[in-house]
Length: 115
Image (cartoon, rainbow, N blue to C red; front, top):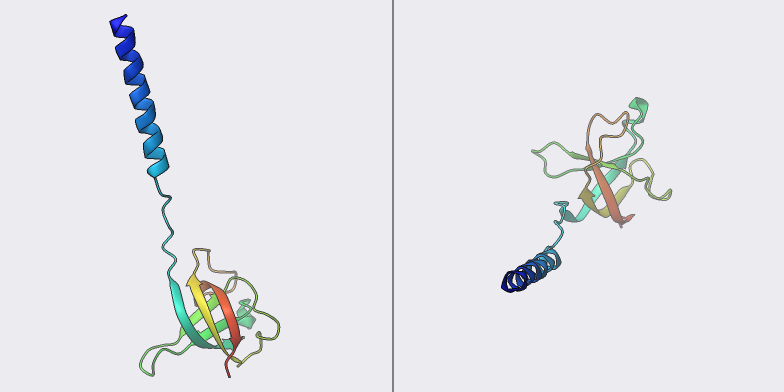
């Protein structure tokens, strides 16, 4: 009887400890770092190769421009070659879209015409 009682207490304590650990676990957060307000120029320079629209961000005179590939289409009013826009972006882990050999796939948010 004593052994059964000890076995019951052991199983009960293991059950409680396992539930506590599961509740305490926090799912990992992906390392998609949101970038602050950015200004860039909409470009269709890669359309011949099959890459629809890119956004060219000039960082400084000495550095080469940053080419961003929106993974979803821009609004029709913003998808104008040469238009200066402001936006936020987050790097995406999707593969390069077909025809886009240059650039970084990104999710664009808060896009608006730059005044």
